[in-house]
Length: 177
Image 1 (tube, rainbow, N blue to C red):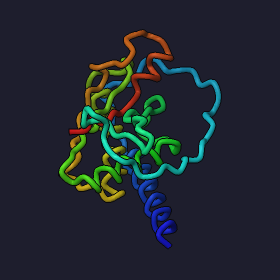
Image 2 (cartoon, helix red, strand yellow):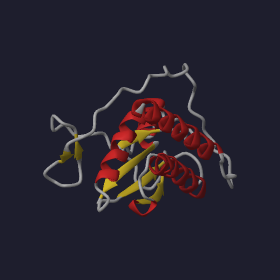
Image 3 (spheres, rainbow, N blue to C red):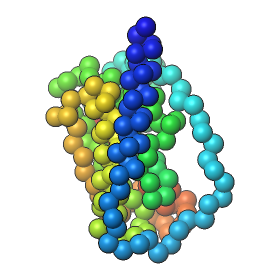
Image 4 (cartoon, helix red, strand yellow):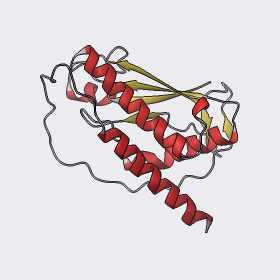
């Protein structure tokens, strides 16, 4: 029964995140370039991840039972703020960590690639961070434990000017405190 309850809660979380991500703000200026569409990405079923054991020695990196770091970076499609289904299990693990450690908090940083205006990218980065925040809150994390920050295009992970770099820069990152 508990598994069915968790699955129901996960499905509700996904729907809430999709609803919030679908509510977009109007851009002050359209994006000039558009990344070519090659083929639809393969939908990957989320893997079942067990509850993690603790944080690494640096006290800011969550690790699984074997001591391996859990991903804190989540990537987005071009001009979208919708969570990838393959990221949901990992986000659920982060939610469990925060629920079990109510004294800990996380900053969700939203990032974009360089295309679009500064204002548009700040808004898109905020929507990406808000999608992660919404998922965490729907999974039981207290809103006081989550801070949302958008850096827009200001902190690229990859400074190159090509589609590979743009894909790396369209992300949200969890920073534990």
